[in-house]
Image (cartoon, rainbow, N blue to C red; front, side, top):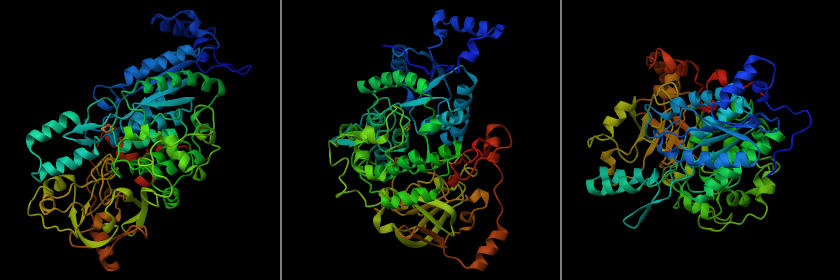
Length: 571
Ligand code: FES
């Protein structure tokens, strides 16, 4: 296979490290050759391609990425480039405390600075678990060197006693049955062994799957990247093709700033709504936009949600798992159904436009990807709320909520923090009923800290034992993309930053009206002012180190929870 064709006079970025008369040009060549390379890796037509690998044994979702990296390398060599793999920190949703989200911005900085500091002409980003995909996209956007992403792919579905299990969503449901005494210890052990049975990220439309689809929808991957299961040989083929393609992207100078635009981000939001994707994507897309100075606000999400039908019948909003989505045609098939809602002229990583990529793409299963005349919902999966409890916004995943609770007024039951909540939900005498509105404070970016996934307040045992499956839950935290229920999240400003959530007390009436996009605390103006005057903010969790940096500089949810000093000037 021939190498890329460069414009006359184009100098590869890496040549400034290697080509020149100084000692350091010589020594960089010599020390790199310590890895066993011949001198011709420094030929003017051979771009150096970084393979940014978030593989880690501490992150099962990304533990297949070593093999993926080898496939990428094959492709890079075939196309005339030189692949050099490098590690960054990895963020494992299951194993990191207090929450992987605390470290998303740190990983983004790691990615950005690794790309910037090294002799790289292009980068292949290898991500998987929830936060690794946005962190790599944020870092690559800031570094703005040609980049393409390959994600780990979803796990295969679990199977237990005739049930198909989607890791994440079904684990939560079955664990609630265990808490209610309807599943035995032995059965839970069987489920533990089969619910996450392969490498890859969670098998439902949780945050990892959603963010892989966002990367594809905004054009940062080859078509079909998001849904190919992790153990499927076609993922390796896609990785090899991505390795070939990045060499061409270098020749075309196809950088993230040319692919990630306001139009392509709005395509991603449209896909998010049609997929019934994770609420976390709202935060991550806002952060990615901020890295490139692209104006994007919660209003974009709500406007697009109102016009976009939810078509994907995938857990947690629907019945199927990511494997089924792949067999149905994956994201290209879904996007083709909503093509009139997309900016089809947006350029993508393969050099073609969105419209060109969608030409002739069939949908192979109308149950998994519903037709427009039989949608899961006439609106998108996520609604943006405002009101006196959320002056700067909040979100709810309406596709995974209980329809009867979407308009509800009830008395608040307040947990002041996570510890109170963990203790309270197990109390069989907790004074709550099906009308209660559970409220959790101090779960936001500063308050968690790190914006943890505490917003999916587990159903109190007192209610589970009575067969109540859902109540309205409200917080300034996030929730896992695999979660479900009538859960209002991302209240901004958060309680730890003095937002109105801090003033709610048990017994106050709270009104939720999703159709009107409102969430309000029903107390008098005088009472508001009294509580505001009495409010004492909690002490900060960190006084030194990364935690201190985080608390001092993290932005609120409606701005993507990035660090203030990492955003670009508006374009
Ligand atoms: Fe990694 Fe679910 S735990 S994607």
